[in-house]
Length: 107
Image (cartoon, rainbow, N blue to C red):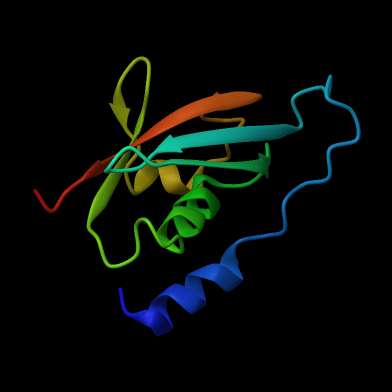
């Protein structure tokens, strides 16, 4: 992805949800992703956000721009592909917290 692609992706990412109470009812999701090279990316999303929002966010980061990568759940390990990107984080059972793994497809 070139710089123009990254800017477009950045605009698709909604603002971080405001946390009213740390003991919230699962209306938000905290996704933590291990990026290739050992970096850890962490951000909160709304439970009703589609996985596409997480993918767009990850694609806009310095750590992943210009790279080819795939997104997986940590346990059980499962590829989150195109079909899953139109489902919400709640539907995918990624709330209230999820650890997602980014695997480099370039290697």
